[in-house]
Amino acid sequence: MIKIKAVYIGNGAESYIEDRLTDGINVIYSLDNNRGKTILMQGAMYALGAIPTFPERFPYREYIYIVDLDVDGKEVSVLRSRNTFAAKTPDGLNAFESEADYSRYWSDNYRSLPSIVKNGRLTSAGLQLYTQMAFIGQDDISSAKVTAGQFNKSDFTEMLYAIAGLDRRELDSAEEAALKRRRDELKGQIKSLTKEASALKTRGTALSAISVTTDTRDMQEFLKELDSARIEVTDLRKARSRYLARLTKNQIVLDELNSLRRDVKAGKLVCLTCGSPSVGYRMADSDVNFDVTSPDMRTQIIDTLQERIDKIKADLDALERDLRKAQNRLSSLLSQNDEFSLADVMACKDDYLSEQEIDGKIQDAQRELDDVKDKLEADRLLTSEVANQRKEFMDSLLSKMNLARRTISGNTQESPYESLFSTKANVFSGSDSTVYFAARTYAIASEINHGMPIMIDSFRADDLSSDREDRLLDLFGRLTNQIVLTTTIKREESTGPDASKYEMDQRVHAIDYSSHELNKIMSAAYNEQFAEKAADFGLVFT
Image (cartoon, rainbow, N blue to C red; front, side):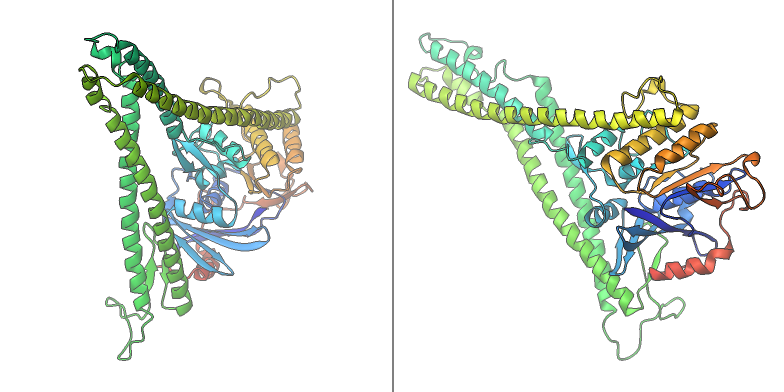
């Protein structure tokens, strides 16, 4: 189970800290809007790798975000600045230059992130998609799509299947397409060779009657496959160039940091600008500076860089293998375009193949055809089995989703959800949208037990009735996940300056944001505590 213990947002000049969250249901409320509830929620999930959907007026790139986590009983602190991350554990510090690198670290150490087939290639879902199971914001949400990014709602569904272990296929899409193409070629070859055997009795046979390629190649399909192979080779070569550039840059930084370990008997290293003996390491695309003057911090950064370099080298090796495979595929496609042109010409001359040779070729082609058919049939059977299991999984998920809907709404006559998402033409709105997201979030957490903290910003938006809210809280109380909800309450829901309906509700832990300044959650009051937290990461503000 993953639980948020504290959230830190700041930049050295102003900051905010929330450390009052409990393991159960937390309700953060205020008597008015724009008191910082959304900034807190977005900041916490942003630190965990989610797509940023901060309010437009908030300059989120100017701040550093830190979350203290309890991950299955282990203490972890995660820092994010723009697209760079750092993870601090009792064992040391790890720094990451991208969301993809951090997602891999997360997958290796905390929760395995699934991979899905996208555009014919295996792609990691990453935390940008993974967090959308458990985090529902206020902005850019719709029952007909996922939050903006490279993924879509089909990818979201595929991710859930993958988490449930229902993603495995014997063949990837490119291999399956190649086998189907080869099957059709072999069928055409057998047919053509049979015609050729018959044609031996007649001189002057037309070339088209014995050409292996005639009527066996759908040119449009061939060109489509050829273009796909070309694009794959191009993309892999570009990716290799990016990895090589990253490898070089990280190796240069590592060499520079290693040089700081040398004892300089004649003096010491100083900043040429200010004369300071302090030396810092700054990650790319970040304002975060790590003080590497300290031997311990320098060692941790060096270890992180070395680990990153080793992973880049491993990725390069895998990329090279994929590139060779893709290049071979492209070469094979190109060579097939004129594979039989010489044989076609020779077949029109007097020295035809003998009937025995033709019969042997037919038998060889038939054996290969049988093998290809067996592979495709095995894939079809496996796909069929997985399809049945997927249907059972989705039926169970939708059943829980509809149960949650009926429980919250109190209406057993409503039309059931038939999919995880609505269509664009029938988007849920108003309180129906509130119920939909609550029901989907509950059902997913219940079905796959992801263990992530569930965070719903403005959980009773669009005038969710008090009765429905009570039933929603009862329903979420069945989950073992940490839950953080925000809402704006009406004045009649507050019985006094120090009490509200939530503070009297034994099911929840109430946190009041009513006293916060309008449109300004951060101030200098938290700067000292924020600086102490940043110092745990070796941060230096400039």
